[in-house]
Length: 199
Image (cartoon, rainbow, N blue to C red; front, side, top):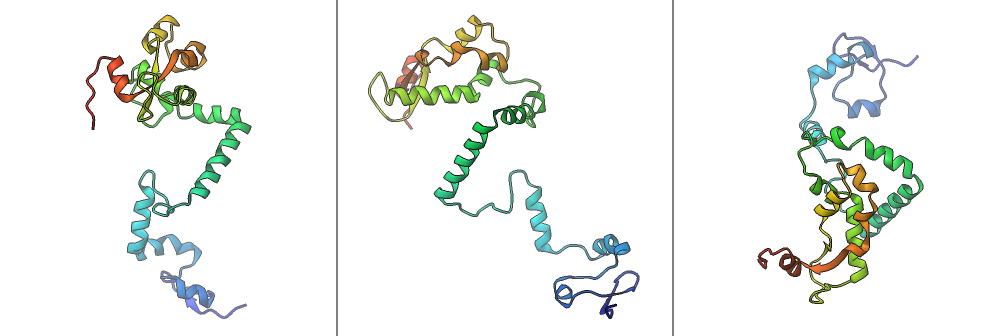
């Protein structure tokens, strides 16, 4: 048995701790009194700051550490590959944070039109339309390109009787590339009869 070299700060029980451990710790306590000792000694200012930072949403120990473009690309490729290999898991994971299960749910306050425009399918549709045309079909500009519905989204929603996002996902009429053209922001404003204010 090792010779005791410290004692519990609560009950005074003799304990052995490695000398390297004794240099690091602020107190020594037996198992029975560990929680009480922690409460009495409290935590350091640095620990308090770290705990507070950890409790804030969206912060972690890597915040502020810049990542190289190469590591970001590798991480992105790895995630895309995993999503392709596990489509069922991706769908299951998505179900857990949709609708009422989402942390920002406000009782279905967002309009269906806006909700559909926020779908991944809509983002992919817009990207594919822009990739196909590469420039504004009206003026030939390549600045601030946007995707425009030839048949308005509102008409497609009412024509196909879409009531929710799931129906929108399964409706092929919404995601036809033939119903989209690429226009610059200025021409897009003109098409919708809005005044364009150049910033």
